[in-house]
Image (cartoon, rainbow, N blue to C red):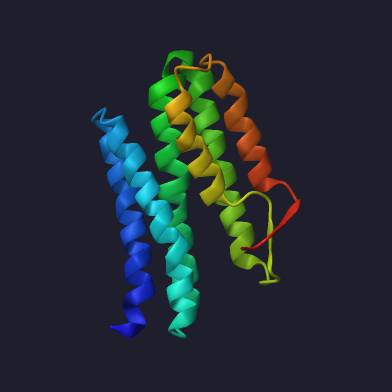
Length: 166
């Protein structure tokens, strides 16, 4: 049980990300937001549990990245695409795809880098959670705002600035 605790948390994160996607597809946007936030909470603890139990593994690292692309790449991009970008047609679709692709690149770079106590670029968890938070202000912003927000977050994920891990 101890050896699988962290991976169970990661798979739960992934499950909530998948549920967020399904909720978006059925136009249950509030549930999608909730599921993404639950995924973020779970993501916060999977690594801590793995380290606390001495169960850090390469499998866990890869599983965490697969979970993150679903929960903080695809789920938020699809949610906000459906809520605000769908009316922009191809341009809106490309912004959502750009966010997902840059998130995947960010995760791949993280997976091949040495742990040094710093993140390079904005973590996908932060970018996806922030994008999801904007759901609550979607009516306050002009939809064109998102044509700028998506690529800004995407570029921040693949940028080379560093952030100290907390």
